[in-house]
Image (cartoon, rainbow, N blue to C red):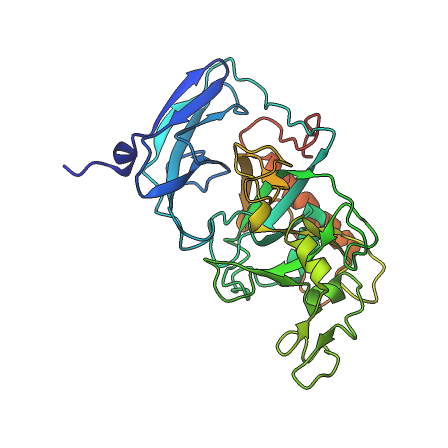
Length: 367
């Protein structure tokens, strides 16, 4: 008899003092693990816990409930946590929470750090692809952008995914408080570096970030003229901006953007005054390991400046559609529609069979 994947990984769970302890046997070919929870044997997962260790503690479950648990393993020595770096999930095991389920542990920032809630739509995969060398956004900003491309939920986007099956992941990030002068993309907010455009290098397994591109400058109301040129040396236009356009940033800007989380305000149109939120870029080199404190100095002289909390919550596009996401197709965004769609995302995350999500000093309820 061939052993199941769960048996090979030694995946087990045990309820202890209000939380579920999930453990497994470390694999010699793996350096990172993702634990997934779902409501039944075939449902999409609604939460992941990721770690380089051999166990996680899930402490925000509902009391006296059955959860279906699986995990996938990350291939060692691969350049990212994106597509092409993970094995297939193990067979699911059934785990049950106790009557004494504890509330989610409050996430705290230190005096020199702050917490940032971000959402990311996975690209070139229907699995979670994490944040390193990727972009993310506030729920409102991402919902506004998604509203542009959801008119045909079954049609594949430029990122080779359909909205219907797309994976949206909500993260809580702790970031170092910084003061970055002379930024051009942040709208004068010195708490962030300049935004970088990521994962457009045609290799999602090894995503890279580059100087803020033409379309992102348009969406953030940054005038690209003079800094973005086509192959003939002319300022980029709507006809060349997406295909034949290169933007330049100062070396100081690039250096800061490769150290700190970058940010741009999102307006969706150069002529619009409707503000929808923020987009962020997350430099790979300065992401903190789970055992590093944000701001920790490393032996090579670098400093880790941002860190994901282990838990991240997931919704699929079809769930957001069920919760009222409006797919009215248009080349412009109606602020009322964008708000409706942001509410659909928040409702979808809140529907998970878990205790309230929080990414601030006290738990905030998604409504």
